[in-house]
Image (cartoon, rainbow, N blue to C red; front, side, top):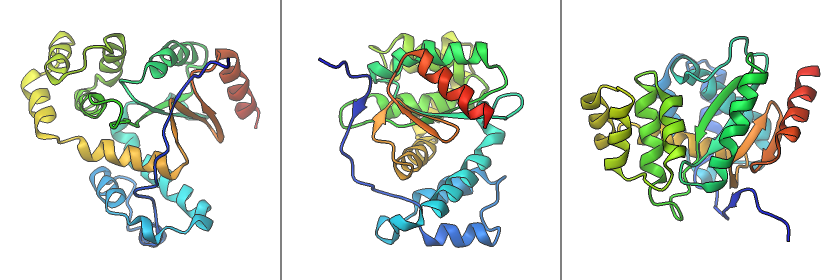
Length: 234
């Protein structure tokens, strides 16, 4: 029997990028420096106005959204020659198997950008949404990857009380973190990540985009290395 390496869901495209966003991009109305506006714009889009033939324009819109997040992301590598986008769920067991793969990529390719995008499968993972928000709250204090590693290492304990305990253990400003988490301040960011992933055709976690190459599942490191080397060679 073939071993599964990802969680698959049949999910309708609930929200995707459409003409209004593209028009905004063309008129410079979607400023790359406007993080909050990028989130707001993506989350207001109407699926009924999406034209599947507009794939190039959709990709352009997502790229612009990613650029708007760069300043706050803490994810981009030193030279940005290649970016790996990860779409992941903190409660997904296959996603936790991918953590050592990502760590190995960071060590062997220190100049490559690693960008983590939230893709919580809330219908089957009840704690995934708040865990994703916790990661973003930690990012606000410059400790996203520390919280990322802690949550994946403690995947069986992702209740809000657990998340607050992890924040304290990482020496975060707990008052600020708790307020961020309790208020749902990062819910919009998480939803924007999810919607961007849906627009890119993400249907499983984890999903990776190594440059232009899509990889689904926690596959052997050798397959990631092959994809990275191929993308770097151009």
